[in-house]
Length: 114
Image 1 (cartoon, one colour):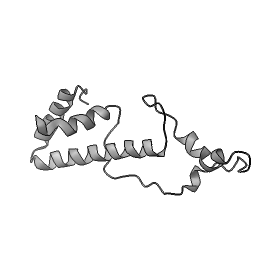
Image 2 (cartoon, rainbow, N blue to C red; image 1 turned 60 degrees about the vertical axis):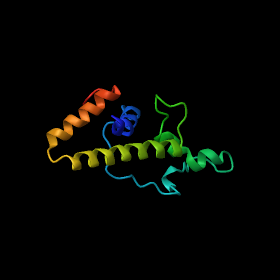
Image 3 (spheres, rainbow, N blue to C red; image 1 turned 90 degrees about the horizontal axis):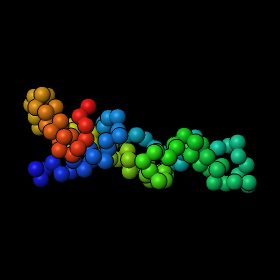
Image 4 (cartoon, rainbow, N blue to C red; image 1 turned 180 degrees about the vertical axis):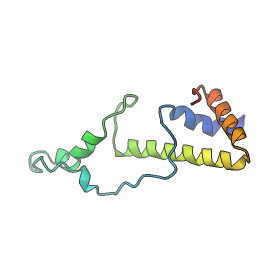
């Protein structure tokens, strides 16, 4: 039961996720598409520099705030979830046993099976 602790934590925290990530999405350190060029930089530099990012990334319903670091943390959790599922399924030669194990972990965590 002890080996199920980490997957339980990740699955419980990601219960709203559609599916795990198999690779991390690329996010440049300077994202020119995040800039809102309709705003004058001398009037409101914050909205000029990241206004489009704010419009494209609304605050999720289960979060009090949302920023680049919160999004990065969420994407990292999805990626780790995908790695754990891959490792779990690779260790099981049959896909049915992998699906049963995933269902057992989901039920132990209180997450509904999909």
